[in-house]
Each structure stands twice: as C-alpha cells, then as structure tokens.
Image: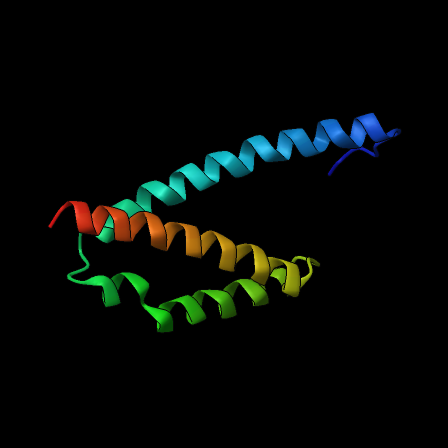
Amino acid sequence: MAEREESLEDVRRAIDAVDVQVVGLLAERERLVRRAASFKKDEQGVRAPARVEQVIEKVRALAGERNASPEVVERVYRAMITAFIELELTEHRENR
C-alpha cells in the first residue's frame, strides 16, 4: 500500500477496496473452474487430490515470497478449493 493509513476507518476503507479486487478475482477463478470442469470426465477428475496439493504447495511458496502467512493462505485456499470442487461436482452431475 502506497500511503499510510491514519485511522481505523482508513484501514477499513483500504480493506474494502481489496475486497472488491478479491471478489473480482474469485469471479474470474470461478469462470476458469467452470471451463476446466467441462474437460473432466468423472468425479475423481473433479476432486483431483494431487492437483489440490500441487496448488497448496504453490500458494504456500507464494505466501512466503509476499510476506503472508503460509498457514493462513493454505487455510483460505483449502476452503476456496473445497467450495469450487462442490460447484464443479454439482455442474458435473447436472450435465451428465
């Protein structure tokens, strides 16, 4: 962040601005997840546990590079991945 926040309200406004970006990025990730789902043949392909662990390893490393807590990033990503897997499974079942 370029400027120093002077109050709690300033920090909250900055967090709100980040939230707008995060939700936009989640929407883009969802769009890509939906595209990827169309290539997967079965529920095991949707769950893809090896891919999940690959992503977790990658984001933990990124967190370390960005001075973020790898543990927090991992927990957030695991929750997000679980939600997207559930979305994919629903779509996969509906499109059979």
